Length: 113
Image (cartoon, rainbow, N blue to C red; front, side, top):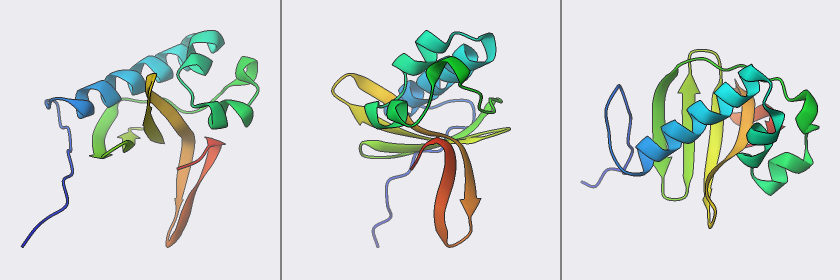
């Protein structure tokens, strides 16, 4: 029986999961401090197209879990769900301010899953 590879961080971990966690923390800190330039640098091009960076306002919170599937990741914080993608420039936030819609895809204030 083979199981899908999923990394869930609960305070420790390694590799991509640590990088995803760090990028998420940088992004949420930049948004919280009003550093819209840094926050925008951490978005994918597609997510950046969907938002006015100077008015970026999404929930932050403490990272509670990170799940990585190849070049895609989902991060749950105490206040938000974010989606990240690994690009040639590194991990970037593809969706933030996301809410589950049950069986339907998440809806996000910025970008999407």
